[in-house]
Image (cartoon, rainbow, N blue to C red; front, side, top):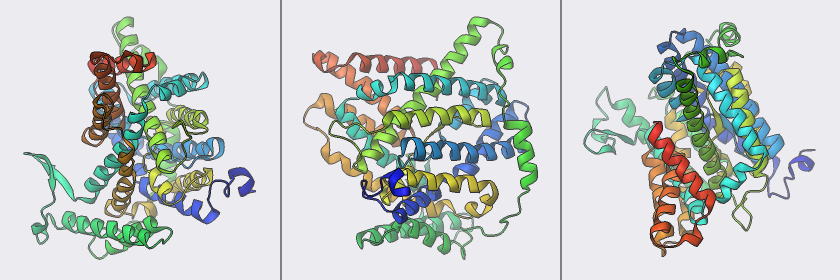
Length: 464
């Protein structure tokens, strides 16, 4: 049955490989079920909501929305990609919309629902696919490399190897402070993560399947005697109270009336909501497109034209997940770049996604067990996968500066601005300007210009 539905042999996959890949993707992205509730609850508290109740509600909303989106990706698109509330988008939801604009949690959910409906409309009518075709080939190649650097940068930060610096923004952790009580946990965590990268790479070189998952588990065990892995406190949460808060605070609690009556003037209200929806839409759309194209390219899933089969179905899954996520009580749901970890383990079909989806749903009950895995254990997976994805650089056209510089900006700005969308935006804007000034008008597509203008307006009118 699995073979007939997912066409495993045709895609060079096996049930075992797909399940391991699904588990790997889940482990590398499981942090979201704790990070997302904490972030949204902080913003909700700033607008008068009960912080703990919102945390409990968003926890369930995060797990269930991730299950719905990822299961759709596996069953409808039959692709090995996972979905969950997106990092960056939840920060915008929290710090810009709720805290900055004093829009309440239920009103902000209404905005996400509107943007989700917009996603569905433009996907059904094929506009998203037109947007993909508007991205020049060299930039499409650069997207994969940029995501690789972005993943590696996130992993290095989670590992504690790269730390904040007031003078240079980032720096290497000071290993000489291992004996310092205040710094020892950070330094030891960094060492464990580095060991994890070595373990994963060595096992992969020897052709051992599940090398990423083995590396994550090894780092988790190594962290126990040093207190990096926190085992105590598992299975102590009050699930009954959490579910009650979910029903009473988050589920179907969108406030459209309050949203449209929240301003002193109709024009101001419509303009504000429109710009927020556009911001959500642009960031989610290009984060998703970047993740799908970059990861699919690395997995060899793109056709001769550089396009991904069943792209429309994959984009529709993303749109439906965003809409259902808003109804459940969380910020925009998007395709996760951590899916690359599962793809690197051999995930090629929707069975990978279905495995991840089941584990996400199980977190509603077993969340503390998942929470045992520290960031120092999942960071090596991100660093390793980042190293795999950077290899696409070899296919870039670096002789034509009108092609090379936009691609370079795409690669550089993704990690440095912590956003896939920013990298694609500046690549497109620079591409249009360079081609225009250098007199290569025939290379510019009308839709590429439209996208560039939209991004310029978005940066001028909204911050993220």
